[in-house]
Amino acid sequence: MSKVVLITGGSSGIGKSIGEYLTEKGFRVYGTSRSPERYTSSKFPILKLDVKEVETISDCIQSLLDREDRIDVLINNAGVGITGPIEEIPLQEMKSHFDTNFFGPLEVIKAVLPQMRKQQSGLIINVTSIAGYMGLPYRGIYSASKGALELVTEAYRMELKSFNIKMTNVAPGDFATNIAAGRFHAPVKENSPYKTAYGNTLKLMDTHVDSGKDPKIMAEAIFKIINTPEPKIHYKVGEFIQKLSIVLKRVLPDKVYERMLLNHYKL
Image (cartoon, rainbow, N blue to C red):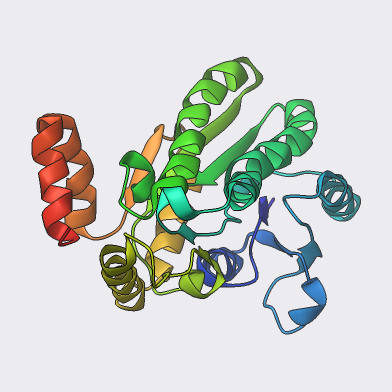
């Protein structure tokens, strides 16, 4: 029997690519969006869900169970970006960001766990980011939210072990998606002490996304993980240099690694 897969944020970008690829491979795929009516031509059904609204999460899961009576794989992909000098990002924007990138995914996990326990099986894949392995200048809040999801997955795996429910992280690097258009940008203020440094870093970040890899690479990685009996705790998908940056952080002295980042961002 084909596995039933739920992908949050499945209407565009990486989520859409994963959904289309898994559909081609014979999975019964459902994506989510805050406005599913905008995606009537999607190759797989799009259900209404806003990770910041708990009621929509429970309604979405119930709707899926009414159709399929099971959930085999949850891909926690919905997320947003945020940039800016930490000093200048409004606190409410920081909280809103964590609601989407951290607390939202936790609420979706809580909603699917009763069904997965009933099945005595299930796989939860949390899409994080290579940025979650390091504090990046002018992306500090984004790094923090993705890093928090990486760590909580490590704990959650152990709590779920006795129920035969698997959980893993997949940290992508830069892919050619529309994430830059949807993220919160703290404005580059004329009178800001960060004006030049932040402005230049923002241009560099946008260039990285524009020249990013095809998100199908991420879809292929997800497909392999689903077909792995015992998934690893962490996976990284991206350019060699991006994955290498994680290794270097482990082995280099802190200040040497910091200097490397400062040079990369020309700060």
